[in-house]
Image (cartoon, rainbow, N blue to C red):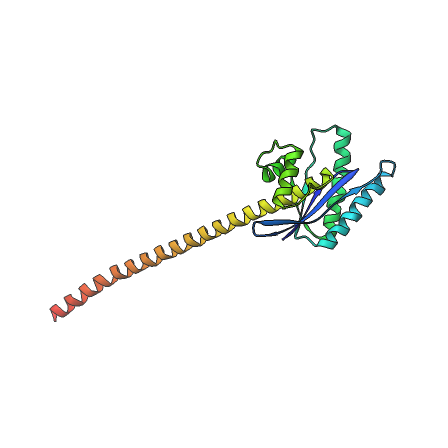
Length: 206
């Protein structure tokens, strides 16, 4: 499975591509889309959308994982990040790819094991999980790869859970079918007993 992670930002939007085979995960590519502050907003958003569309078209992922907006930052920064995130979502929609959205805390929890992890810890775990020989730079790339790892981990967990639930359901259905068959068999035997008794009575009267 190929997953692309996106860390949205107006000045810098990080992206990272990972490929999974079972529990094994490896990075295929990553990068950062940079836009200049002196460029018109609509053009900056257009650049983000166009370049992400190119990345998605090149690597053809089964799904995209994108980080939610952290509203603890100042309002203006949050609005600009939200606009960049919107441009990224448009790119995903145009390419017809499924999108998973995760909060920063969910990503940290899935990758590091604690939602309170700092950037250094996230980068270290991304490098370790993907077996990279270097730290992904800039940090936006590491965050994007972390989002992809988060999505891959949770997808595998949900798939395993669904398989277990499906097997449990099949077992329950089989058990109920067996119980019904047993009940019908017992009813059949109970119905045959009076018939046998009546036959014996008729023979005696003859």
